[in-house]
Length: 602
Image (cartoon, rainbow, N blue to C red; front, side, top):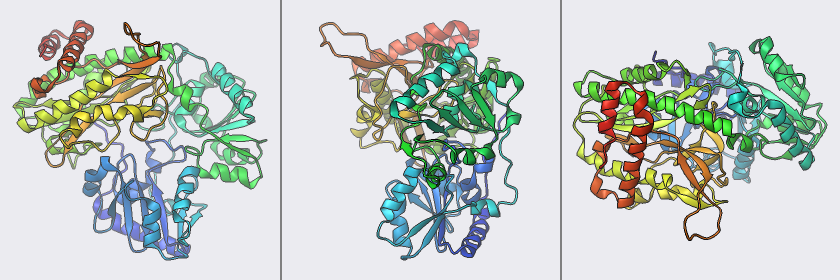
């Protein structure tokens, strides 16, 4: 049942592959090439065909990039991946670079003399990416050169084929709004902005707008393709016809025209302007195709991105149902783990396999929502750790285990992290675990005025850690799709997010703490933004709050109760009472007995 979809290379593969890339660059008179972790759709996850960064360097994280020059090759990664990158790449050949502290523009300007030409694939970078980099290189004499063919593809002899999984209908009872209504609503917005058409390149936007789902990207129910939405509501879909059965074409209706992907660029060149293009998600090449024909471009957000994030009542109901189903699986799993873990016979792959089995036992799972993060002991300190046969570690009694996982169901998407004591509790983990819990509770209980963004709430999750000179190098939460991608924009709980939170948005709430070489701690629930009920005697002010969607116990053995304030303890006890009430009646008798103990008040 355990599957590893990542394109992987051994560290020893990196040097010869980099040498081959440098030979191609030298033939083209280039001083370097930028290799992003991206495809033409700018999603977080890529198909094996597009895993160029992993193939070249060995780094398999979900964010980062390599700048390969003739005398050095930097692999730029953020705080989530700084332990992981050192384990996956040949550090004598590739130099890990702390990004965004070190930015690519100054790094390139310092590494190259004036006249240096650095290539990039204009289908794999957005306009914003390249504009920012060019601005940073101003005055350096270093030029960025768009290339007609990606040189990594030229040296990758067994590059996988493009994905070709069949698409499927997303049932209207789960979407809550039919595609024609969505298209008409968005087309009205185009007319108000004076745009004749909008280009849509994000796969989850495409799937949301057409009420379809697919399996082109592992763990993400999306169809790869591009679309042009016209101000009439008509949509031209550029995707391979083999993915679309007759019933699905009938579902799309007469106002959706299906054309091959190869027709996308020519279609752009014949559009009447203005054409709305998202500078932060559309490939730079889209703007180049339009610009070369003199077609006016209206730079604005993907028109689907905010409507998609604000869930319909039907989507919220589906997410609630999916979370109840998922909680049953998680409780059965945690009861099993509590019995088997202390015996000392498990490893990380065994835990991952068992957890997926409990989810599949519901007969409702379509796919897990991302590769399960299961970090035993020091592996838990690797924030986005993915177990492989090479890294698989025993689950040892006396250590803690971090398990971050989720499920894709036809009606919803889940994402949950629990940190679990295996046998005897390690004393040095309890204080940071309690601080992480305090941060999770603070977000869960937050009330705030309408108009505030994730950056305004993020500190609430960190204050208890900050008081101990501790922190974590990732955002506190991300948006989550409804039976779509587990990571969804535009809203986040992050110090860099300025998108106002609105009722109907669903986000994760996942503070953490990581001690390299020892353990990792993260506690994650999903929460729904909703209108806050008025308080007695309060001002007449519109306030928002979070409703919890995840109902799974938090390991009480790792909590130092004396560190909790009375209101924090009350929240935790109420949460566990709700878990027992909601989930207890639907699990097996053995799991119910375990749950009663796990949910006892402190």
